[in-house]
Amino acid sequence: MHDLRKAARSAADLATDHLACVAEGPVWRPVPEADRTWLTRQPLPAGGRPLTDLLDEVRDRILPYPMGNGHPRFFGWVNSPPSPAGVLTAPLAAAMNPSCAGGDHAGVLLERTAVRWLAELVGFPHRTGGGLLTSGASMATVVALATARHQALRDQGHDVRETGLYGQRPLALYVSAEAHSCLRKAAELLGLGTRHLRTVPVDAAFRMDTGELRRLIAADRRAGVRPFFVAASAGTVNTGAVDPLDDIAVIAAEHGLWYHIDGAYGALGILAQDAALRYAGLERANSLALDPHKWLGVPVDAGCVLFREPAGARDAFSLVPPYLRDDDAGELGWFSEYGTEQTRPFRALRVWATIAHLGRDGIVRLVQHTSALARTLAELVEASYDFELLAPTVTSIVAFRHRPPNLDTDRVEALNKAIPAAVQRRGRTFLTGTQLSGAAALRACILHPDTTEDDLALLLREIRVAAREVTA
Image (cartoon, rainbow, N blue to C red; front, top):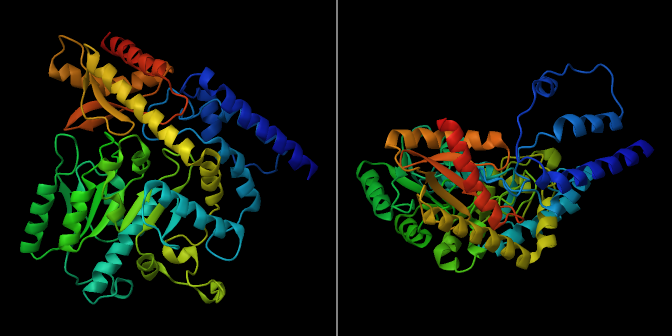
């Protein structure tokens, strides 16, 4: 125990020193060949090593090569810096090491509060048992879609858990052209396939076109295909767009569709100033996916799925073997009855600690600060002579393009494809690219509480320098 205590203190110092120095170093750096070889080709050790030796290797060969998302000038993908409270409590959850499948212990009980707090933050109606923490929105989507599939076939008089999808009338799903790939993966995984996965076009603001949604539903009904599920986005990963949630809720109700909202990144955007109207209708969904490990900064992994009615998920998943049956578990049963995981980690401690540390007011400040910076970046882009804004900025993502004068369309396309890697190599900031309307685009996602307007100006300068390097 003495060795563990000594090493634990050293690990705490390592973590603290790492976080304290992140902003002073490069955002990202390539891994030298010697360390790459060590990271990927270590032989299985025959004998063990002291904990202090392991920490030395972590210090020298792992901590110097982060992904970059802890840095205030990291604008890539949708990856946040870790919350201090989450970093602090993660080792404590590991020290307890419970399985949060169920039972009467702190990990299970605290998850009830963590889930309820998330629902309250975004204004989703929550009944006890109406949600659980997952590894992320991808798994949350699988859980939600499986629940919707179970209910749709039960309404047709079939038990999908017994008969599967054999011989059933085809079921159609509707997702936006800007929908996250996890929806397609979930449809494939659950045997629904992609033949009847309908991609709904988007409008000029990259929001789902509800007129096209109605047209696709009508066409499927005429063809004998049953519409059963529609997924809207509350903050897409490409542009941060929020679909017309209330209008989609009306269509879902008219046609008896399960209404799911992917709010993995953007659901917390409802807390930004003057954002409530944009999110109207979120509270009408049957299910909502959101990721505390995105905007909220809970250390990975921490996703969540919320249900309007919890009984549906339990009907779809509950299968309690005799050795785990607990007649004292109460009306709600075990968390493992509401999803795919049996052994479940103690995610709730990191979620609870992050929310408790920030409080609602602190979370609102974080969302408003990062959203305001995104609007500032959009204004800088629009005011420039060589950048072009590609989409309205409604959350904390800015989609734009570098367009130097006197470059033709093909050269602009090639340049914008090459810019992200060139910016990353320079190490002063981090940017990623995407495709919008079939063309290469740049996107900056702002999630770090310490990002400043100076960092935004530096980002644009670095893009210009990288572009000159590429063209040279």
